[in-house]
Image (cartoon, rainbow, N blue to C red; front, side, top):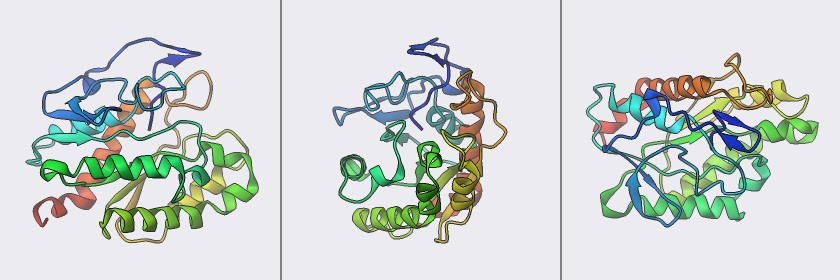
Length: 228
């Protein structure tokens, strides 16, 4: 989710596709917990130890805005930290606490959390143990997050991996597909072109993924926009 599109080594090429351009109707919560007009790289001040580029978030938001869904301002709350295992996001960890804290800030001034976008798991492909335990840990993560945010039906849109750091990509992908909780859906990133590192998605793949996530949200959860 942090976005490595257009990143080669430690440099981002600064190319921003049309679907990722800023829009005054799309905001992001920055690291200082202030709303601002969203811009790429969306995670520039969140995933600070790595070089951020294009991710799926802006494409998702722009696709939602262009859908005619009637949604007004779209506010994004970037929380991703690249290269992390799912165990680093369990309840009580720093990443989890930061996610919950930032999500709660977004509720001020009448905000409503519509969904969590989740693209993670490449680091869990290095170990059979991590891959085999992924499903249980992910279900626990979702249950804990819903409980702590007091949103028992929070929609979750997760991405089935396009790649991984180890040999157990298929195991993690299968675990993602088999999450057995209500209001959880996934989009399949397998086959989307990768950067030269053979791990992260290209810029155009990130754009495509954001569109896929937006369509999944609108198809699966749009009715909830008008019932809350």
